[in-house]
Image 1 (cartoon, rainbow over the protein chains, first blue to last red):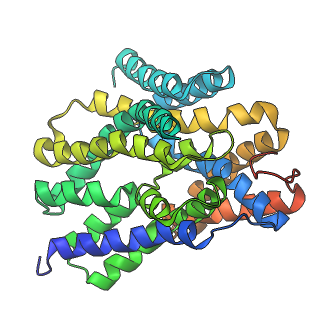
Image 2 (image 1 turned 30 degrees about the vertical axis):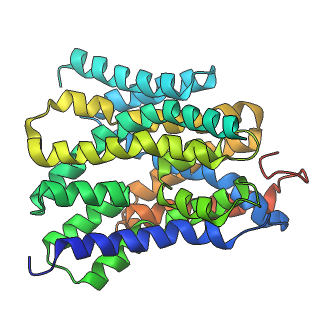
Length: 103
Length: 241
């Protein structure tokens, strides 16, 4: 490596921070435009759903355990499971499933 | 006011625990990639503590290993992390419009997929101390996991890492599923998002697009379509669907 690694890190940090902080600091008032407001209302749900599937399927050692965790997590969240409960349940499902499947 | 801050900070610490566990697991893999890129433990740990971005860091480390120029690394980092721009826009509407600049500057440090997802889903206005609480536990998880990855390499039991790494997806589900019960449009959008995301990853046409870019494209197209077809009623907060 000819370059200084800390300079790389500084550059990566600076550009990431600018992206994160600019809208939050520049948009200081409530947006009144109905379409933009509706768009921003839907963004979190869509982006979280898109990040979950199909990425979860390749996060574990076998897609089978991931499918089980997905089904279990969706069901538990539907019936009122908390953030912590759903998260831990998904981990437990994968652990047990992979133990049983001997992967 | 002070008790309100305290209350939200403590709630953030509590809700940050699953984020910390998930981060710890995911960042071990990141640490291993940093080690493979020839980075030292302090370098990788500092990078994680500052940058807090999985795909972004992974791409960065890969480019560093390849001896890419500073400009290339910065440009790729911007592309990989562009989704935070959208998240920051959404958060700008979630906080009190009179929130002082210093809080906005601080909150921006910790806009990650998970901290964003949890904080944007609170009822009513978002108190920045909630984000600080989550960041206070999540950041060490991310940094220490990276450190473990560099130091231990592949010595950790694979089964443990595998189980922990779905924790973050469980968190996401606990955020987007409950509103599906109350709002049929959100339910349909989540189903559509799953299918579209699956298709985009399965079809070879989109192979040239990075995963970060896919997330942005899907989010913008689906959310914009929904906003045009089903504009949110309510004159107060944007969180009243």
